[in-house]
Length: 369
Image (cartoon, rainbow, N blue to C red):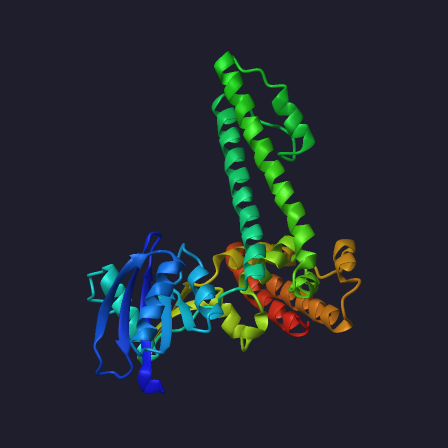
């Protein structure tokens, strides 16, 4: 049966798909089949033509990109084999300076036939929906930060400095509302900047509220609730991590998860020389960011605060014990690294790396439907 397999490489774009075919066997030619429009209907037509010519067993591959997973879900729903690969994980010759759609499709088909491609994890439609929600909040938060920076820069240019302790508090907003600019045009600009900040903040609040509404209905809700037993891991951090990573049990060990998140040191070893640098920053940057933010909570002594106790009330004892073990270790780790004179950013990154391991351990203790 294996001799009858046809490997199909798809170079997918917004309005087109370039197709290349490779028959089983390393001696077989890899050739361009043609180009079609980007719809799944056009792809179905190609599949019917190939199957009518005796190519009953088809295996598809394409690169992950802005077109998402529509093709993957469509093909797998029809019972066909399909994988999605990350562009960064595709082997490429360093001397290869020519890149075309035809060559990309042929390369995918060739590598699929050789077994040199590693598929990425494709989330379910429900998982992707929660992921889109958390990413939308992340985008809204970035827009809010940018709007605040523009407003602060405008006030600073005109000599207005807030003397209070906490920015963006109720007192700070009242202080800005009392500012009278020297020209009507500048007053208009100030009001527009303030309104932009207000709109962005309201958008963040709306999306945060919706995360609280949809996550409890999600199949991964038990895992989201369980990892919140960890210090610094609130609902947003937990929902972002689980929606981006999916089922954490797909990682065989915590080291594999750390590598996926790009939290392991880079290394260049040759002969007797061993050189290690900063973290690789490969993989999922969304989870890496929220874990580094959560890691700052461990700079304080270990304790179960009222907020953390409330999050742990209905969790199994085993999960609570793992969370306390994590807190004791990571707080001590933070102090030890600080005593050695390590920069705070380096310490937070090291804590985030170990925090991901404890998150993996807790997720393994929670059954998922």
